[in-house]
Image (tube, rainbow, N blue to C red; front, top):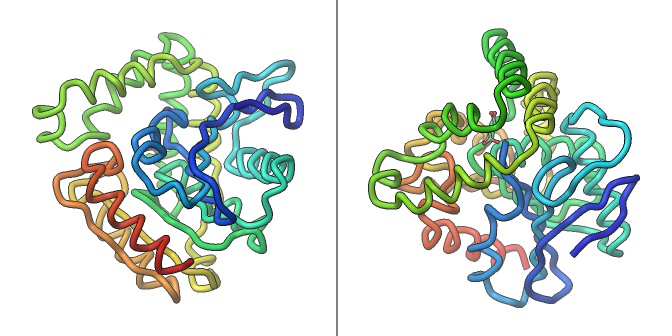
Amino acid sequence: MQATIDGIRLHWREAGHGPRVVVFVHAFPLDGSMWEDQLRRLPRRWRLLAPDLRGFGMTREGGALEPLTMERFADDLALWLEHLGVDRVTLCGLSMGGYVSFAFWRRYRERVHALVLCDTRASTDSAEGREARHALAARVRKEGAQVVAEAMIPRLLAPATRQGHPDLEQRLRGIIESQPAESIARAAEGMASREESTPLLPEIDVPVLVIVGAEDAAATVEEARRMRDAIPDARLVEIPGAAHLPNLEQPAAFDTALVHFLEAIE
Ligand code: MLT
């Protein structure tokens, strides 16, 4: 499905029906296709939407290329939901999708019914982390998306996933390599400049599910526990046998956690 939103053709995948809407926000540098398993497997009584963020997947940009900040992505989501006539949503964001969810909460909290924060962090990057993002942006502009796939795949998947599911590694590589280098670079810069969200956590007054892969080195279990402890109404599910992408590495455990949460907040 596609709609023109603020000068771009925003593309999304959709499944299910019903008044409750769940929006799945993808990680960096992936696209909405990372949620295909969830859209196929989750009960149809919820309306499930998985957009490709600006510059990624089939959401191609025309005209001027803007910085891809987390706020820019959040504004796109808000305009798109207005276009769909959807008032309130459960946002399920993974990693960069979690940063976008925090930006959405900062700007549009009245439109959030609940949050699912997967393998993400409320904190900003360290100085070294920011430098690494700028270095990555420079490299990807010069050498293309393949360098990002090489650098990221070992961080995204647990060793057992890479061994047992070479098909998944191939699929991820394909997704990453199909993203425009310029979008990857601008989103890396956007993440480097993202706002600190830790002070927001005690103010989040909707139900929250925190999910983390037990082997995630990018957004760790310790960070997930700190988020759970700081948010008034939060629960945490740690997924064994998964690193940074538990919805792909351990879809059955991920879906069970998500379905229990969605049922509990209905
Ligand atoms: C992601 O999966 O979205 C990235 O790991 C986010 C990040 O680099 O912080």
